Length: 186
Image (cartoon, rainbow, N blue to C red; front, top):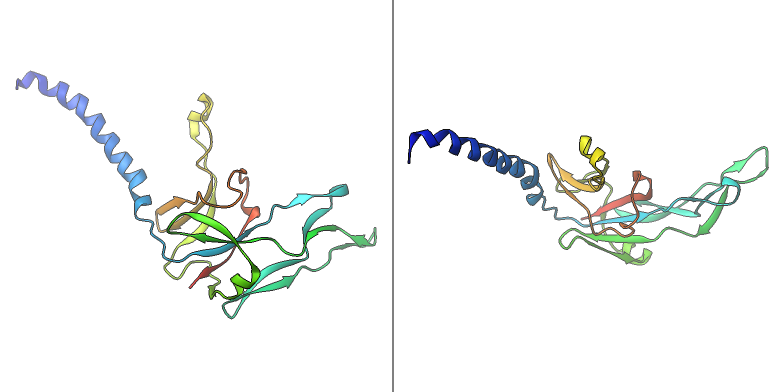
């Protein structure tokens, strides 16, 4: 090898080395996200009904002594109209169990959920949390890139992984309001 080719080799290989290092720093932490505890959640697709009234459920969920319970939603009454501001669309939201091993969700009944032992959290017993994160693509949005970096992530420390197996994941989560983590399964 000639020494006069050394600057050319360094000039070509150095950017490649930087690309490999940056890729490892960005993508490698998600390979180490291995939560051990499934969780129970619901999606409350909050919509607005007639005349701007909220459409909600008569009950929501809570955790008491490690068991899921139904919690009645208090009536919201407009004093000037003397009528309720909520149009109920059902008794309670649908419950789902998220399997962290397979990254899938499936619907469960209230009876099934009540048989589970839950940890309210906010973190799982092994230290993972679920949170909504919204990021843009910086200057590259100018060139028509999309914003698919937003969504719900499970994370511990700096390592995180997007939760792709959620029910209603085809709808775009503009905010965390339509996802509610009920508890972590012990």
